[in-house]
Length: 228
Image: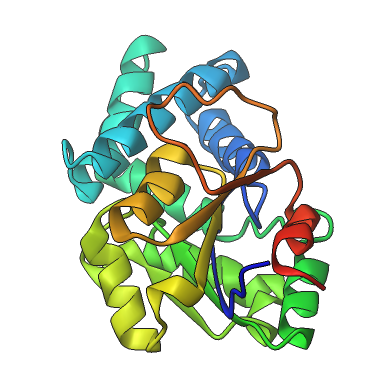
């Protein structure tokens, strides 16, 4: 069994239930602006697509924040007076949604007891992620949080992980990246020559032309890889 001393954990849909957090925040926005909740799954699809564009360098983070609401307001035939204001309102609401998956804290607690270094690697917004982490209790167990907005690069860019390695002093061969996104976490690890573990909780098919080092269906399954 290969020894991994440093665990690089994704945040959203790995530790946090982002789908529920997003639904709650979007529902509040839609309620304020009289958009039917039937548009929530449509919004989620738009948002996911735009985040994929961000990972591919096709859109800026600031443009993404506003564009998703421009699209959904247009589809719902609701006038959008100030997209930046609505984006800010949404960001504030999302920051208050600190919903961890059952067992996420226990996994981090056990990793710490095994002497592992734990770093969070996320493409999220600085204000949102910091607030959610403060509320979650995760800060008691992790050694650092790397948010792409402050790093200057986003996963899957090699530069993002180069920055993490430089700041932590970790070696590639002792790291394991764990996350739910093939296009962000797994491709990022491949680009950076770091072993990866795909958290595939929904049993999705891998249609990419690359593969993770490992695949698990629940976060607690990682101990079958790293021991403990």
